[in-house]
Image (tube, rainbow, N blue to C red; front, side):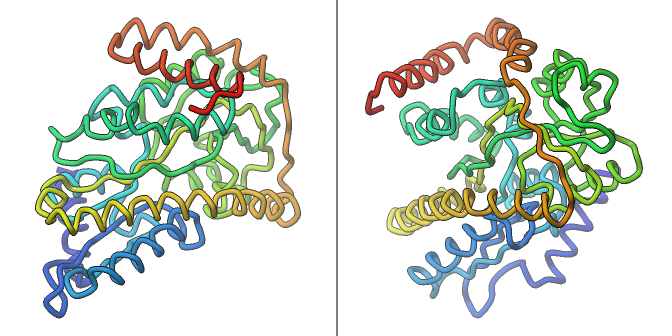
Length: 338
């Protein structure tokens, strides 16, 4: 009943905000995400909006709803399924619940470097089958977003080695892989929506969380959590998903324009990411007095590598993807072009 009530409230908000139906004869395209307006995700979406309206402005009016205005990611994924909204940015962890092929990206230390991560995500032959795996659920992925490296940040003490996580309640994304990862690290996993994290940190419901540097500033977590530790346990993409019926109803010419828009969105978001991280680190350090810690990553990696075999044995369809990812990494180390 609570879920149904939440969806009804969101549907009413869509109506009040004028995000239903048409405006001046144009079809309104609704896009939701959970980040602030200065976040690279929103910056990229604004460029997407400009591009689509410059090419198809007589037909479409793009509206962007940041800051979980239309609900949590779980809610907006459901709304995208039904077509109540057209696109939403979803975490990989949520998509894992629709098709467990997305488990692959939640494996800690899957990638050797950001270059390895980007090379894999830009490999269309490898990624496209993953992106279309949720068609049966009424949506498909259309673009990936760089979300940097995920690291631990805590309120009362810094994390210098895995033993420092013992007994700490750490917010993780809502997926079995992430819960198991925290078990291997020795911490107590506390899954919750991203929008709940600030209050949970402030009230002591959790001792820390794990995310990229922008969570400290764009989402103000650095006001409460004063220690940020670069254990670099994950590089997990955020994903822009689209309602399948909407996408399939586009003409071939319109879909070509949208595809170009998706590529532009991803490109602009990724370009904005590096500058935003540097700005966030400086702000967190100088204004919020967050202490950045650089531990021995090998100590953390050793704790959670068993999760690779656990997941691959439980989900054999991931093995070819995993092997290809490792192959791409080896080619990069050897100076290959892939």
